[in-house]
Image (cartoon, rainbow, N blue to C red; front, side, top):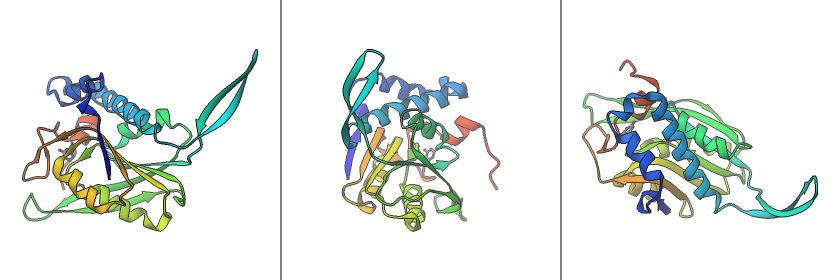
Length: 219
Ligand code: URA
């Protein structure tokens, strides 16, 4: 897997990442969602450099302009609900993409550290020969990313796979590296060292879904 951790370079991206981690700034959920969206736009921009480009001519009111445009058919798949702001950011740039949504959540068993990923809802177009972007803001254990990929199998074999995440744990990055095809790309804004016993990224940012959309009742 090709891993590109964008926080390794100094850029404005690191300000957006520190704002989503900051407990005080997090209280403004509109800013939290917008920052995730901005991060999605930056990750999408970097990813766009690896697409396949073809020459094209654009006609202006005063003449012709020779340029290049990508011709990949993109399917953007996100995991509900935390993935929605990241999805929006990517869709702002890949505005002609088709879209897939999946609900995958952690079902905790007797011990908090034991959970299985339950997939309940999935809507997806045909994936055959397309460029699949799989977006999950928090790449903690990597189990949701894998469960999503497995659930997408009946929809066809994509030509390229790009995983997009905001914050990951090294363990989750290592896990997906062993489970996805070798030529998969991972575009990630920051990688932290550890997970706690509940599978949360440390220091991470907390619960991305709650911070975007409010606390949920645990059932
Ligand atoms: N999901 C989150 O929202 N946060 C984590 O740290 C891990 C998974």
